[in-house]
Image (tube, rainbow, N blue to C red; front, side, top):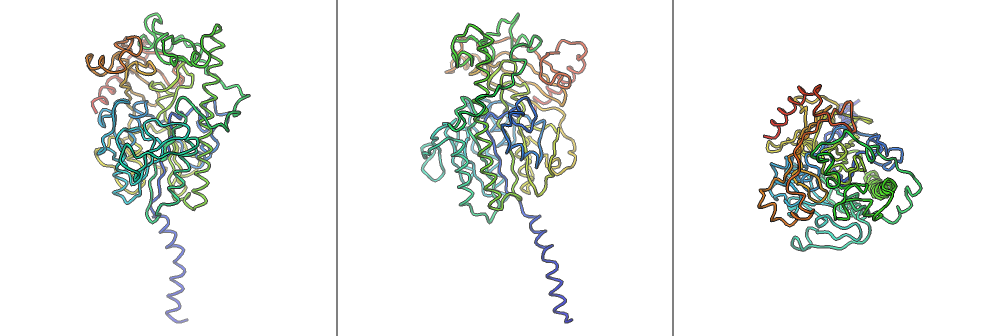
Length: 510
C-alpha cells in the first residue's frame, strides 16, 4: 500500500474523533428562564403538597434530566431587588436596589456585559422590572413595569427611544412571550453562542390565566396547609403583636383575619366580601386563590413544552444550558399569608433547575446552599469566563459538574427593606443555614422618619406603618420544616442562637 494511501486512511480514521472533540469544546448556548412568583411548592419535582396535582410535567421532566437545587434562596423576596441581584451578582445594599422604588443603574447590568465580552449574543424578552433601559443587551423586548396579562405592550429595542418604543401584541402574555423568544431564535445568527433571558409575567398576582384553563382543576379539592387555620406557636410579637393585637393588620391573609380597609388585605374579602362563616370563607378563598394561581402555572409549563420542542427540532437542545427559576417564592396560604416578602421558607426559597445534557448527569439533586447572587457568576463560568471580583456571589459550576465545592458558605443572608407597604409585612433581616433560621424584625422603615412620612405610600394603611414591635424568631428547620414553632426563647438553643447572631453581624457588613 502506498504511503499516501496509508496517511489518508489514518486521517479519515481520526475524523470522528476530531468532530467529537470540536463538539465537546463548543461553548454552550444559555437560556435563563424565570417566571414571576413561581414558588417551588407548586412544582411537582419538589414534591410538596401540590405535587399530586401534576401542575408542571414539562418542568418535572426537565428536572429529572438535569439537576434540581433544593436550597436555592433569594436575599430579598420582592421582584425588583431579586432581579437586580441576579443581573448584578450583588446584594441589594451593594447594587442599590433595595425596594420597588429603586432602579438598577445601567452600568450595573453586569451579566449581559460580561456575556458579551465572552462573544455571546445577548437578549432579554418578557418581564424586566428594573426601571432603566436594558441597554447592555444586544436585543430586548420587555414589559413596561409589571406589564399586562392580556394583549401586553412591550418596549422593543430598535423601535424608537426608551421609554416610548412601545409595540402592541395580542394574546395571553405567557403565549406571547414564548412566541417572541422562538421568533428571536429563528432569526438569530447562530454562528456564535447566544444568551437569552426568557422571563414570564405569570404567575404574578392577580393570576389572570388564559381562557383555555378555565376548567383546569375545576372539580379538584386543592390540599390546604394546616397552618392556614391553626398555628399557636408561630411568629412573634413583631408579626402578631402583644396578645395577638396585630393579627388583624400584619400580612395579607387568605382568611378574613386582616381587617384593613383595603379590600386586597384579605382574599376572602376580595373574592367573597363579608362572610358569616369565616372558616368556610377561608376555604373558598383558598381554593380560588390556588386554582387561579395554578392555572397560570399550567400556562407557563405548557409554553415551556413548546419552547423545548422548538430547541429539539432545531438541534439546539444538547448544547444549550437551560436554567429555570422564579424571582422568589410565594406564600400559598401557609401561615394564612398571601404574596411574598417574608423570610419564611415558601417565599425565600427559589425553584432552581439546570439542564445541560452535554455536561450534567440525569436525576441529580443537591442540597448546596446557594442564593441569587450566585447565578450570574455560575453562568459566566458556564460560558467559559471567570466571575469578576465585583460580584459578591460565587460560581457553583463544580456542583453542576458533579464535583465538591471548596470553601462554600454555611449561611445565606436575607433582608426585606420595605416596611408595612403593599402587603403589610414588617421590615426584617436574618440568616438561614442548612438546618436553622434566625430572623430579626426591627420594626420600622429604613428611610429617616421625615423622608418616610413624606412618601406617597406613608398613610396608605391607617398609620400602622410608622413602627411595629421589634422581635426575634428562630426556627429549627430540621425538626420543624414548616416553621410552626418559634424557638427563640427556648434555652436549649441559646448557644446556637448566639453563634448565629455573630454570623448574622458578619454577613451584614459584607
